[in-house]
Image (tube, rainbow, N blue to C red; front, side, top):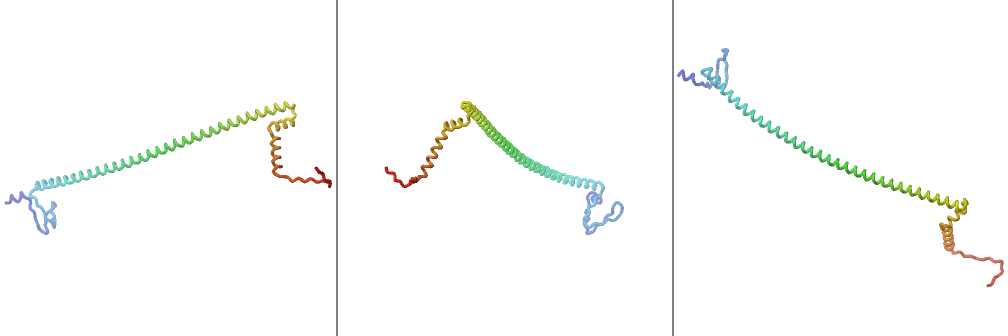
Length: 194
């Protein structure tokens, strides 16, 4: 019986238990105490408990690691989505900017062409006016030489040739006709009979 007691651990269930510590001090506890008959049993039980604790710790670490990996993957996925959204927005903005640049270049080219066309037209008009002025100068000089340098005779010729006198006569006749003049003839009292 004594051998059996040494083989199995003994549980002491008192409200207060007393034990001797390794230093010989009395230790009092208020919970059940498991007594081991040998140090080997105590070491074996402690090793088992440590292995169980280590297994629980490993399971918890695995769980924490899995949660961590999942959260990292979720964060990376969210970052990837945001980066892709940002890249899409950036790409759209680049395309919009490129389109605006092309529109501006087209407008500039059209404006340059319009200005170049206006310049060409004005240059041609100026050249035409210069040619007309030169031709008129040659014409006037030729007429002046034909009239032996007499400017008054040349002026009268140009006015007659261009119909200026005829237009003046028509204008004067129209003005007089519009007046409807009432002409009275005064005499010295002598009556003229017809």
